[in-house]
Image (cartoon, rainbow, N blue to C red):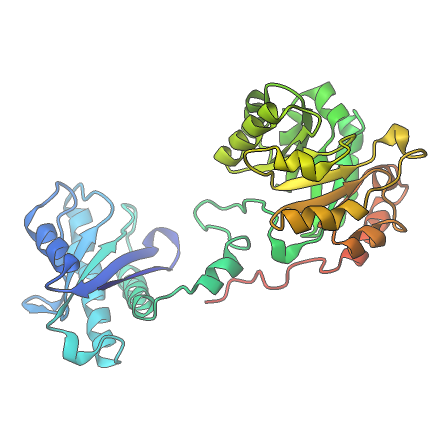
Length: 393
């Protein structure tokens, strides 16, 4: 048996990142410990943690540098403040009961330590690595994180090194408002985006006319104008599904749309490629008489289905809100979106039937007061901004 822990503590070049594994001396961790101590790698020489020279800590702990040690200045940081910090953290953890005292002779620890080559402040190197080691060890012994914690944070978190949030559509945040940016006028579209209220509920759609005029490169412009919003490329793909997915993905699309009128073979390749690349696959069921039958004909199901009434038929076609429950019953993991002349009066009807996404175009984009018109829908959807996004451990 063994346990794994991780922690990031500190800032600037002295930031500490610890990965560790603790387990039985007679088991796999013990074997890895012995191998690490005897099979050395150039630039990554491991060292036993010590509180001071000639006083190793227990459980015995192997400190392994993550970053290649190129010279004696790098070596001093590892064999000085980092080694001492790890050793003191392990000893304090035993004293505080994080590690059972009666098991210190039976366990060993392998601790992977990050020291930035430009780190200079030895006191901060010590403090950050002490805190990170102790936190990683405590997390390991508590089996942190729980699955609930992972599910809660996976779509809220921002990796500090990457520095930006990957837009996703988590179920806990549904329903959403998708704004269809169809007008083939990029300056007008940018103005609309600038007037939208800030909301975690808003999705942007690069509409088919917009893409036809400017190409998929317009997706990047929408991303830039909206501070990295979730952007859907409404390709309405009918053929060469894989190729069109790749084009939109390369230009930053978070989701792509194929027409439900395409053959199952085209849609299968479309869905496969979108999921391979980690973006959402959407099927627009405009003019598809039986959406459920169409879904059953596919090898894999899309992430989102759109029940769409086309603009030119709004006066003659009915909105198919009755299909929402039918789709969700047969395919409970699929999001169902509705589109086609949706307004503040029809949106509540769709939401009542279980719609996950309300798609609105002209009511917002052609409004004299874009923010107010958007708010009319946001207020119906609820939960304007996720107040639980604050990073708390």
